[in-house]
Length: 134
Image (cartoon, rainbow, N blue to C red; front, side, top):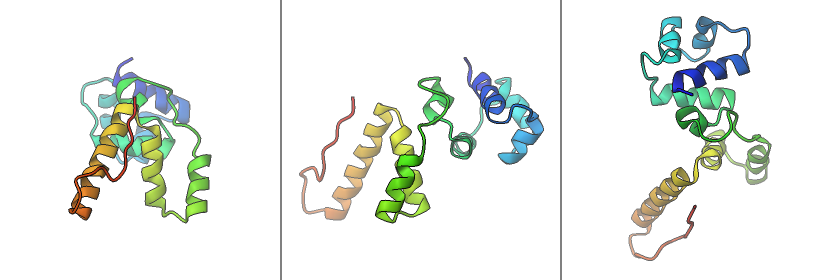
């Protein structure tokens, strides 16, 4: 299944009667753009794909690569974390993005966080935390 076919599948699964124009309007693009995306004439921007994923709870890895399930896991657990730890909406969204990422993407996220933590702590070269995904 191509990216365009996956985009069309999302449109049909989330709003079965929505036209390309209606669906595109919800995502800030024209009917022409939606048609071009669905026909693989034009590749959508990363921003568009992230917005679609967040707005319709679509698994971004499935959307981009066709791996996994179309829809991201329920957000109930993230909602509970947000409540229990008094997280902002942005913090909860970041956690949800990490939880729905493929293992190799998670590893990249944690490697980047490790680098940021080192910059903050400058005094140590020891890992501040250790997480490996396989």
